[in-house]
Length: 221
Image (tube, rainbow, N blue to C red):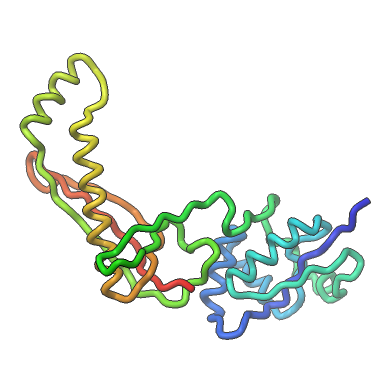
């Protein structure tokens, strides 16, 4: 029978890390609420994961480390008795183990006007990196009008069915232009990544619509 391990967290942060930011990252990674965070930072050792294999335990340790905190992996039977006797340490982790920060997540990069690159992601963190500084909201937008030629083809497609390729191309161009403007704004702030990126559209006039891209500019390390 293979050895089993416990993941123990004692509320210790890595040097130079902000406690509030660490808590938010752990909440997001482990999908727990404020009560669960309160238990983790109660001042006594907490068994975050019990009787698991070493690979899963290492995933938990990586999640905590990426968030800016330190946790320990102890072979089953060697857990600090305070963790089980305190009564304040029910397992706050989800039933399934958290994914490694770099698992199944692709990070998109786009070139900037000064020859560098900007990381763009629709999640709140950049996998494998730590957010060192927040610059705030950045955005980019473009307003495009319909093209009479495209309208004519769209009318024909409504009769026979099929993709409106002219409009598809129009939206792709609009989205890219909005992203480029958002990236340039972030670059001027000194950011090297934009997280939590979203898109929205709105009608501003008959036959014209705005495509709006926005996110949070950050510096990652």
